[in-house]
Image 1: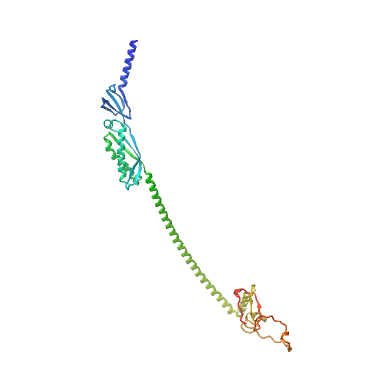
Image 2 (image 1 turned 30 degrees about the vertical axis):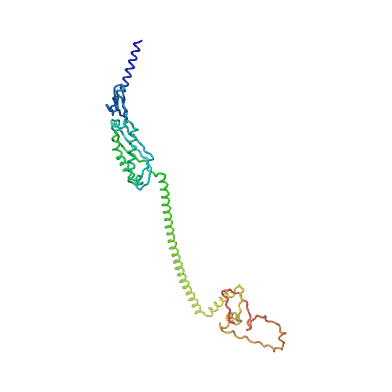
Length: 345
């Protein structure tokens, strides 16, 4: 029984010594072997390694051997011209010298990243300080990131760290600057819109003036052509009238008289006062004898018996009082107002 107990204790001790003397380094890690707090070895290749099985004597510190990332968010930077912007960026780094990393940063990522943050912020402010806002949105963006990486590298190299890359994620206006920029852009757009409206109104007025001038010219030309055609028509009409008059003056005189009767004797109830022997009624005489402008032939006077003496106050009032003193008789002839022409008795 005692032998079994001793054998079990010995087996446990052997296993403890065996497992405490073994350590594994995988492909994502590096190992620093410390003896009494001092570095005696650095393992950078993955594998199974041995050490003195007592932690007081030999200890192992595992260091990352992969790319690490550090993010910087909402950092305020001042660009050329005095405006402030907010920047989001990150960098990737790798521990390339574990021994140096242990000696300077005690192998702690927290200590290393504090120094990285300080260097990273200073580098970004320097990069942005010599450029304007649009540079971060143009082809200069890659140059800015490379310049920031080169500025950080010397300061963190003493930590055994190498900066692999720097990336700028966002460059945006701060809230206060954003409001001022918005108001300025709004005022600029309003001014531009007013300018465009003024130019449009000017162009519209110019086009309208040109159209009005062209309309006046077209109407003037049309009026000129109309007057020419009207004059030519009047000339042709006069020529036709003259030809007709020369061909048969008597018929032409008759035709013109019929036209005058048609125009004068309308249905408007116009009163015309004419003497019976007026030239206007020439063709109303017996067979239209006589010549216009000549008095009608005197009719034969029938034999009339001698009048008897009758007092004037006993004569019948056979002729109505017309108010005319020359013996003319009023005749009501309907005619149009435009054609009313009083004839000379």
